[in-house]
Length: 430
Image (tube, rainbow, N blue to C red):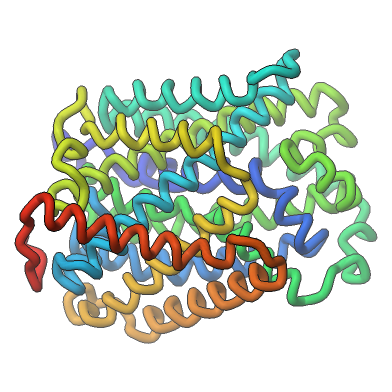
């Protein structure tokens, strides 16, 4: 049943979730994940998908019971009240979303330079800024335009990706996927630092709950359905890619790995077609995630955890859209892709784990299985431990990245709480 003023139906929600996931991951970071786990990267995608499914189940049940544009921000408030813990984790989630978007925007710039006859100078940076500004305008017009764009772009990317995958699987050399080429088992699980990033966009569906005519029915189905579809796609694409080219060649072309995979099957034309679809796919990921981050910023502004300006009207959206877009551009022009993708992943995993722990306090209201909620918590805990182990073995500053982001988020919460004079409540008022 259609409800006037509620433009995000089931297929629009599925398209939004797929659009947010497919683009930032399989196009931007397939080569980066392969650098860690080699031709066994398909196993890492399965592991990442299982974590996403467990986490998605918990978030979907929360979203069905508490439909809100704020998504996880709302669920944290329901479980823990609006106080320093909820505020700090919400600010951390928002910051991680902006960091992740900056990685995706950077990937768009890299693919644009690979596809178009340009070189040198600052072309990649220019394309990065241009795509963010484009979707600032799309989101400025409101949720209906966001939903329409997602349906169109998801159809395009699936048509081409399916064709590439089928052709790749039909012509691949199975010997390239032989376990004798696999790295140590630890490397396969360590690549979760990258492969989970390819799934983390699924949570944007929860941010569209207020624009759904029947969120209790639509949200859980759209959430789990989109994750399953993407999981199958990722595994198939990874097998086709690493079965068509040696891992070394894919890693060497890591900034546009999937386009390079098309060469053996379709030649230079295939390279350009896949690179073009990558641009569309990454663009749709930016579109959906920018929409979600704007809603999160608005929810945070409502509770005093971001300045009130983030919640003021801006066209058919909110001013958080403008501030988020500026932050994405700044970070995309200054940060390294692989390290920041890892930092974004572990930050999101941490927030998800705390959210699921809070869900245990609300399971009597959501009707969710406590066993499945605990499973989500355990899987996330193991994933974080593995990622942190990998970071410690690599050395460098990134091992302190999560504690640093947590500290900055907590400091931001305390400062804004003092500036806004917000009264800390023990329970979210509805």
